[in-house]
Length: 111
Image (cartoon, rainbow, N blue to C red; front, top):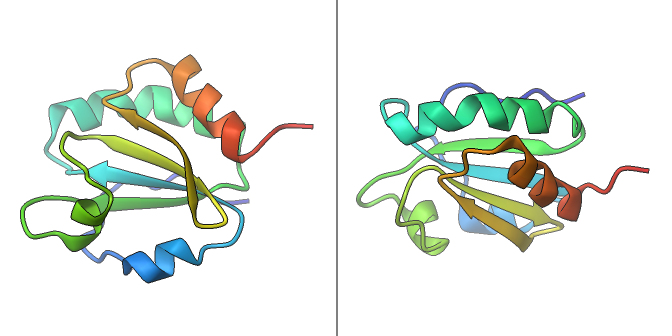
């Protein structure tokens, strides 16, 4: 079982590495000091609890950060839901667990 990450990491994988992740993955862009990012954590945790197989990348974003630019990230947090390297859903500044759960369902359908 995978765990939801709680801290944005300054060490970002390459875009090629993200594009080759097998199975469902969530790429979350933001910063540890961002108020919108902090506000999104409770609904994200609620939705993530039903999807323990989803790999979570929590990436610190900002000027000059290549991975965020490659995804066209403009506002934080931006959640990108991928399966086998393909983006299937994207949420920007989500505040509701239901909308996050709906995006999770696109990459990790429950039986």
